[in-house]
Image (cartoon, rainbow, N blue to C red):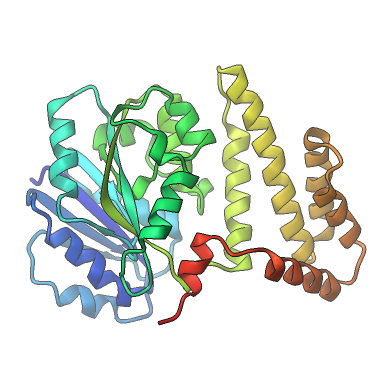
Length: 329
Protein backbone atom coordinates (compact mmCIF):
# COMPACT_ATOMS: atom_id res chain seq x y z
CA UNK A 1 0.00 0.00 0.00
CA UNK A 2 1.37 3.42 -1.00
CA UNK A 3 2.00 5.99 1.72
CA UNK A 4 0.63 8.95 -0.29
CA UNK A 5 -2.51 9.15 -2.39
CA UNK A 6 -2.45 11.82 -5.09
CA UNK A 7 -5.83 12.58 -6.66
CA UNK A 8 -6.39 14.46 -9.92
CA UNK A 9 -10.11 14.99 -10.64
CA UNK A 10 -10.58 15.75 -14.31
CA UNK A 11 -13.23 16.77 -16.80
CA UNK A 12 -12.68 17.44 -20.48
CA UNK A 13 -9.13 18.76 -20.13
CA UNK A 14 -7.04 16.06 -21.75
CA UNK A 15 -4.81 18.77 -23.26
CA UNK A 16 -3.69 19.79 -19.74
CA UNK A 17 -3.98 16.42 -18.02
CA UNK A 18 -0.73 15.05 -19.45
CA UNK A 19 1.23 17.89 -17.86
CA UNK A 20 -0.47 17.34 -14.51
CA UNK A 21 0.10 13.57 -14.51
CA UNK A 22 3.74 13.87 -15.53
CA UNK A 23 4.33 16.28 -12.66
CA UNK A 24 3.36 13.46 -10.27
CA UNK A 25 5.28 10.71 -12.07
CA UNK A 26 8.41 12.92 -11.97
CA UNK A 27 8.37 13.34 -8.18
CA UNK A 28 11.61 12.70 -6.29
CA UNK A 29 9.47 10.81 -3.74
CA UNK A 30 8.06 7.60 -5.22
CA UNK A 31 5.87 5.90 -2.59
CA UNK A 32 2.55 7.12 -3.96
CA UNK A 33 -0.54 6.08 -5.85
CA UNK A 34 -2.07 8.40 -8.43
CA UNK A 35 -5.85 8.33 -8.73
CA UNK A 36 -7.32 10.02 -11.79
CA UNK A 37 -11.09 10.41 -11.40
CA UNK A 38 -12.78 11.31 -14.67
CA UNK A 39 -16.22 12.93 -14.45
CA UNK A 40 -17.47 11.47 -17.74
CA UNK A 41 -15.24 13.54 -20.03
CA UNK A 42 -16.49 13.53 -23.65
CA UNK A 43 -12.97 14.20 -25.00
CA UNK A 44 -10.09 11.74 -25.39
CA UNK A 45 -9.22 11.58 -21.67
CA UNK A 46 -9.47 7.73 -21.54
CA UNK A 47 -6.95 7.43 -24.38
CA UNK A 48 -4.59 9.91 -22.73
CA UNK A 49 -4.68 8.00 -19.43
CA UNK A 50 -4.20 4.67 -21.23
CA UNK A 51 -0.98 6.05 -22.67
CA UNK A 52 0.65 6.16 -19.23
CA UNK A 53 2.33 2.85 -18.46
CA UNK A 54 2.78 3.16 -14.71
CA UNK A 55 1.34 0.68 -12.23
CA UNK A 56 0.88 3.44 -9.62
CA UNK A 57 -1.91 5.01 -11.68
CA UNK A 58 -5.53 4.11 -10.93
CA UNK A 59 -8.21 5.39 -13.29
CA UNK A 60 -11.80 5.91 -12.15
CA UNK A 61 -14.14 6.86 -14.98
CA UNK A 62 -17.74 7.86 -14.28
CA UNK A 63 -19.98 7.24 -17.26
CA UNK A 64 -22.18 10.23 -16.39
CA UNK A 65 -21.12 13.63 -15.14
CA UNK A 66 -21.74 13.66 -11.37
CA UNK A 67 -20.43 17.13 -10.53
CA UNK A 68 -17.12 18.53 -9.37
CA UNK A 69 -17.37 17.79 -5.64
CA UNK A 70 -18.75 14.28 -6.04
CA UNK A 71 -16.03 13.48 -8.54
CA UNK A 72 -13.43 14.69 -6.03
CA UNK A 73 -15.02 12.56 -3.31
CA UNK A 74 -14.81 9.45 -5.50
CA UNK A 75 -11.03 9.82 -5.65
CA UNK A 76 -10.80 10.44 -1.92
CA UNK A 77 -12.96 7.44 -1.08
CA UNK A 78 -10.85 5.18 -3.31
CA UNK A 79 -7.53 6.34 -1.85
CA UNK A 80 -5.48 4.05 0.40
CA UNK A 81 -2.59 6.24 1.56
CA UNK A 82 -1.94 7.76 4.98
CA UNK A 83 -1.40 11.13 3.31
CA UNK A 84 -3.57 12.73 0.63
CA UNK A 85 -3.42 15.57 -1.87
CA UNK A 86 -5.90 16.66 -4.51
CA UNK A 87 -5.02 19.13 -7.24
CA UNK A 88 -6.81 20.13 -10.42
CA UNK A 89 -6.21 18.70 -13.87
CA UNK A 90 -4.81 21.98 -15.22
CA UNK A 91 -2.27 22.42 -12.40
CA UNK A 92 0.94 20.60 -11.43
CA UNK A 93 3.35 19.73 -8.63
CA UNK A 94 7.04 20.63 -8.75
CA UNK A 95 9.37 17.59 -8.47
CA UNK A 96 10.16 17.97 -4.75
CA UNK A 97 6.62 18.64 -3.51
CA UNK A 98 5.97 15.21 -2.03
CA UNK A 99 9.47 14.70 -0.66
CA UNK A 100 9.43 17.96 1.30
CA UNK A 101 5.83 17.87 2.56
CA UNK A 102 5.93 14.16 3.50
CA UNK A 103 9.08 14.84 5.51
CA UNK A 104 7.27 17.43 7.66
CA UNK A 105 4.29 15.15 8.36
CA UNK A 106 6.64 12.27 9.15
CA UNK A 107 8.66 14.35 11.60
CA UNK A 108 5.77 15.97 13.50
CA UNK A 109 2.69 13.83 14.23
CA UNK A 110 0.85 16.90 15.59
CA UNK A 111 0.74 18.55 12.16
CA UNK A 112 -2.41 17.67 10.21
CA UNK A 113 -1.52 19.30 6.89
CA UNK A 114 1.31 21.12 5.14
CA UNK A 115 0.59 23.98 2.74
CA UNK A 116 3.19 25.38 0.35
CA UNK A 117 3.45 28.44 -1.83
CA UNK A 118 2.90 28.09 -5.56
CA UNK A 119 3.88 29.42 -8.96
CA UNK A 120 1.40 30.99 -11.37
CA UNK A 121 1.67 29.46 -14.85
CA UNK A 122 -0.05 30.43 -18.10
CA UNK A 123 -1.90 28.35 -20.69
CA UNK A 124 1.44 27.28 -22.17
CA UNK A 125 2.79 26.06 -18.80
CA UNK A 126 5.22 28.97 -18.52
CA UNK A 127 5.85 30.37 -15.05
CA UNK A 128 4.86 34.03 -14.73
CA UNK A 129 7.09 35.53 -12.04
CA UNK A 130 5.31 38.89 -11.82
CA UNK A 131 1.89 37.24 -11.36
CA UNK A 132 3.37 34.76 -8.88
CA UNK A 133 4.67 37.63 -6.74
CA UNK A 134 1.39 39.57 -6.97
CA UNK A 135 -0.57 36.45 -6.05
CA UNK A 136 1.54 35.84 -2.95
CA UNK A 137 1.03 39.45 -1.84
CA UNK A 138 -2.70 39.50 -2.61
CA UNK A 139 -3.41 36.44 -0.47
CA UNK A 140 -0.91 37.30 2.25
CA UNK A 141 1.36 34.31 1.68
CA UNK A 142 4.37 36.62 1.83
CA UNK A 143 3.43 37.42 5.45
CA UNK A 144 3.20 33.86 6.76
CA UNK A 145 6.32 32.50 8.39
CA UNK A 146 7.47 28.91 8.01
CA UNK A 147 6.11 26.63 10.70
CA UNK A 148 2.83 26.07 12.57
CA UNK A 149 0.14 28.52 11.46
CA UNK A 150 -0.96 30.20 14.69
CA UNK A 151 -4.07 32.02 13.41
CA UNK A 152 -5.55 29.28 11.24
CA UNK A 153 -9.16 30.49 11.44
CA UNK A 154 -8.13 33.92 10.18
CA UNK A 155 -5.82 32.55 7.49
CA UNK A 156 -8.37 30.10 6.08
CA UNK A 157 -11.53 32.19 6.34
CA UNK A 158 -10.61 35.87 6.28
CA UNK A 159 -7.33 36.04 4.38
CA UNK A 160 -7.94 32.85 2.37
CA UNK A 161 -4.17 32.52 2.15
CA UNK A 162 -4.03 28.72 1.91
CA UNK A 163 -4.83 26.53 -1.07
CA UNK A 164 -5.94 22.90 -1.12
CA UNK A 165 -4.07 22.10 -4.33
CA UNK A 166 -0.72 22.99 -2.77
CA UNK A 167 -1.41 21.12 0.49
CA UNK A 168 -0.60 17.60 1.67
CA UNK A 169 -3.07 16.32 4.30
CA UNK A 170 -3.22 13.45 6.70
CA UNK A 171 -6.04 11.32 5.36
CA UNK A 172 -7.41 10.93 8.90
CA UNK A 173 -8.12 14.65 9.38
CA UNK A 174 -9.99 14.82 6.07
CA UNK A 175 -12.02 11.78 7.06
CA UNK A 176 -12.91 13.50 10.32
CA UNK A 177 -14.67 16.34 8.47
CA UNK A 178 -16.05 14.02 5.75
CA UNK A 179 -13.81 15.67 3.12
CA UNK A 180 -15.63 17.75 0.47
CA UNK A 181 -19.20 18.91 1.02
CA UNK A 182 -21.21 18.50 -2.23
CA UNK A 183 -23.43 21.39 -1.12
CA UNK A 184 -20.36 23.63 -1.33
CA UNK A 185 -19.72 22.66 -4.97
CA UNK A 186 -17.68 25.43 -6.58
CA UNK A 187 -16.33 26.61 -3.23
CA UNK A 188 -15.39 23.28 -1.69
CA UNK A 189 -11.64 23.94 -1.33
CA UNK A 190 -12.20 27.09 0.72
CA UNK A 191 -14.86 25.33 2.78
CA UNK A 192 -12.67 22.31 3.53
CA UNK A 193 -9.86 24.41 4.98
CA UNK A 194 -12.22 26.52 7.10
CA UNK A 195 -13.93 23.44 8.53
CA UNK A 196 -10.56 21.92 9.43
CA UNK A 197 -9.58 25.14 11.21
CA UNK A 198 -12.89 25.27 13.08
CA UNK A 199 -12.30 21.87 14.69
CA UNK A 200 -8.79 22.80 15.78
CA UNK A 201 -6.62 21.00 13.22
CA UNK A 202 -2.97 22.06 12.94
CA UNK A 203 -1.61 23.50 9.71
CA UNK A 204 2.04 24.06 8.78
CA UNK A 205 3.19 26.57 6.15
CA UNK A 206 6.19 25.83 3.96
CA UNK A 207 6.95 29.01 1.97
CA UNK A 208 8.72 27.23 -0.89
CA UNK A 209 7.14 27.32 -4.36
CA UNK A 210 6.31 23.63 -4.78
CA UNK A 211 3.16 23.70 -6.91
CA UNK A 212 2.03 25.34 -10.17
CA UNK A 213 -1.41 26.94 -10.44
CA UNK A 214 -2.59 27.70 -13.96
CA UNK A 215 -4.58 30.71 -15.14
CA UNK A 216 -6.22 30.31 -18.54
CA UNK A 217 -9.19 31.62 -20.48
CA UNK A 218 -11.44 28.64 -19.83
CA UNK A 219 -11.80 29.47 -16.14
CA UNK A 220 -14.12 32.48 -16.28
CA UNK A 221 -17.78 32.93 -17.22
CA UNK A 222 -20.91 34.49 -15.76
CA UNK A 223 -22.34 31.03 -15.06
CA UNK A 224 -19.26 29.90 -13.17
CA UNK A 225 -19.19 33.08 -11.11
CA UNK A 226 -22.87 32.70 -10.25
CA UNK A 227 -22.36 29.08 -9.20
CA UNK A 228 -19.33 30.03 -7.10
CA UNK A 229 -21.16 32.86 -5.35
CA UNK A 230 -24.12 30.63 -4.50
CA UNK A 231 -21.75 28.07 -2.98
CA UNK A 232 -19.80 30.75 -1.13
CA UNK A 233 -23.01 32.15 0.37
CA UNK A 234 -23.98 28.66 1.55
CA UNK A 235 -20.59 28.15 3.21
CA UNK A 236 -20.26 31.51 4.97
CA UNK A 237 -23.81 31.29 6.28
CA UNK A 238 -22.98 27.96 7.97
CA UNK A 239 -19.88 29.07 9.89
CA UNK A 240 -19.71 30.53 13.38
CA UNK A 241 -16.53 31.74 15.08
CA UNK A 242 -15.90 32.06 18.81
CA UNK A 243 -13.51 34.93 18.08
CA UNK A 244 -15.92 37.89 18.10
CA UNK A 245 -13.77 40.01 15.78
CA UNK A 246 -13.70 37.22 13.22
CA UNK A 247 -17.42 36.60 13.67
CA UNK A 248 -18.08 40.25 12.81
CA UNK A 249 -15.88 39.85 9.73
CA UNK A 250 -17.95 36.80 8.79
CA UNK A 251 -21.17 38.82 8.89
CA UNK A 252 -19.62 41.50 6.70
CA UNK A 253 -18.29 38.92 4.24
CA UNK A 254 -21.73 37.31 4.14
CA UNK A 255 -23.30 40.67 3.26
CA UNK A 256 -20.65 41.33 0.60
CA UNK A 257 -21.37 37.95 -0.96
CA UNK A 258 -25.11 38.66 -0.88
CA UNK A 259 -24.37 41.91 -2.70
CA UNK A 260 -22.19 40.22 -5.34
CA UNK A 261 -24.70 37.44 -5.91
CA UNK A 262 -27.62 39.85 -5.97
CA UNK A 263 -26.00 41.85 -8.76
CA UNK A 264 -25.27 38.68 -10.75
CA UNK A 265 -28.86 37.49 -10.40
CA UNK A 266 -30.20 40.85 -11.56
CA UNK A 267 -27.87 40.64 -14.55
CA UNK A 268 -29.32 37.21 -15.38
CA UNK A 269 -32.89 38.41 -15.10
CA UNK A 270 -33.64 36.83 -11.70
CA UNK A 271 -34.85 40.18 -10.48
CA UNK A 272 -36.85 39.37 -7.36
CA UNK A 273 -34.19 37.09 -5.90
CA UNK A 274 -31.48 39.66 -6.71
CA UNK A 275 -33.36 42.51 -5.04
CA UNK A 276 -33.91 40.42 -1.90
CA UNK A 277 -30.20 39.72 -1.55
CA UNK A 278 -29.25 43.35 -2.14
CA UNK A 279 -31.75 44.43 0.51
CA UNK A 280 -30.26 41.94 2.99
CA UNK A 281 -26.73 43.14 2.28
CA UNK A 282 -27.84 46.74 2.74
CA UNK A 283 -28.80 45.98 6.36
CA UNK A 284 -25.15 45.27 7.14
CA UNK A 285 -23.19 47.32 4.59
CA UNK A 286 -25.46 50.33 4.49
CA UNK A 287 -26.65 52.19 1.40
CA UNK A 288 -23.57 51.79 -0.79
CA UNK A 289 -23.41 53.15 -4.34
CA UNK A 290 -22.99 49.60 -5.65
CA UNK A 291 -26.15 48.34 -3.95
CA UNK A 292 -28.19 51.38 -4.98
CA UNK A 293 -27.00 51.03 -8.58
CA UNK A 294 -27.97 47.36 -8.57
CA UNK A 295 -31.44 48.10 -7.26
CA UNK A 296 -31.87 50.86 -9.85
CA UNK A 297 -30.75 48.59 -12.68
CA UNK A 298 -33.23 45.93 -11.60
CA UNK A 299 -36.01 48.14 -12.99
CA UNK A 300 -34.36 48.42 -16.41
CA UNK A 301 -34.93 46.04 -19.34
CA UNK A 302 -32.69 42.97 -19.12
CA UNK A 303 -30.63 43.77 -22.23
CA UNK A 304 -29.90 47.26 -20.92
CA UNK A 305 -28.76 45.89 -17.52
CA UNK A 306 -26.38 43.50 -19.22
CA UNK A 307 -25.01 46.23 -21.49
CA UNK A 308 -24.31 48.57 -18.55
CA UNK A 309 -22.52 45.87 -16.53
CA UNK A 310 -20.54 44.79 -19.57
CA UNK A 311 -19.30 48.37 -19.99
CA UNK A 312 -18.34 48.58 -16.31
CA UNK A 313 -16.24 45.40 -16.65
CA UNK A 314 -14.48 46.74 -19.73
CA UNK A 315 -13.57 49.95 -17.91
CA UNK A 316 -12.27 48.10 -14.88
CA UNK A 317 -8.46 47.70 -14.98
CA UNK A 318 -7.32 44.11 -15.49
CA UNK A 319 -5.61 42.50 -12.53
CA UNK A 320 -2.77 40.01 -12.81
CA UNK A 321 -5.13 37.02 -13.10
CA UNK A 322 -6.97 38.48 -16.09
CA UNK A 323 -3.70 39.52 -17.75
CA UNK A 324 -2.35 35.95 -17.56
CA UNK A 325 -5.65 34.47 -18.77
CA UNK A 326 -5.95 36.76 -21.77
CA UNK A 327 -2.32 37.02 -22.83
CA UNK A 328 -1.44 35.88 -26.35
CA UNK A 329 1.92 34.78 -27.73
